[in-house]
Length: 177
Image (cartoon, rainbow, N blue to C red):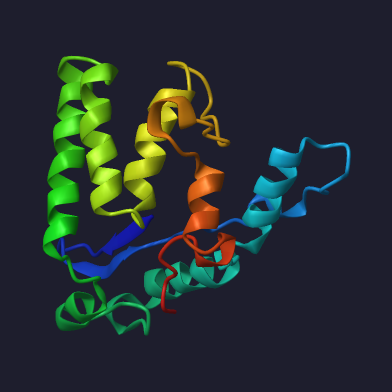
C-alpha cells in the first residue's frame, strides 16, 4: 500500500495497492509435485493484477511534472477517490490500533482478540490481516512468512480469505491510473 505526499505535506493520491516491480511469484512454475495448498496459493497469486510497470511510470511522471502530473490529484479528487469509511470500518481501525498498542505493551496474546474483531468488522482490509497474521506466523527477526497459515489462532489464512473474498483478481485496492 502507498499514499503519495508532496513536498508541502499534501496528500496527492489516496491509499492504494502499490508495487514498482513484478512479483517473482508470478513467474514461478506451478508443478504437480508442489503440495496442493501451495499450488492453490500460487494460482491465486498469479491472478493478482500486475500493475507494477504502470505504477512505476506514474511515479516517474509525478517526479518529473509535480503537481502538473496527470497522476497527482487535487485535494478534492483525493477525497472523492478515497474509500468512504462506514462506522464498522472506523470501529475496525480503532480495534486494530488497540491491538497494536496491546501487542507492543502487553504481548501478542492480548492483541489477538482485538485484531480478530477488526478483521470481522472490515473483512476486506488486507492490511489489518497481513500485519496480524505476520506477527503470528513469523518468528522475530525472520523474513516474513508469506503463506500465513494462521488458522489455529485466527480461524483462517491468507489463501482462505482470498478465495472467500473473490480470488486473487479481487485482492487489494487497485490504483486508478
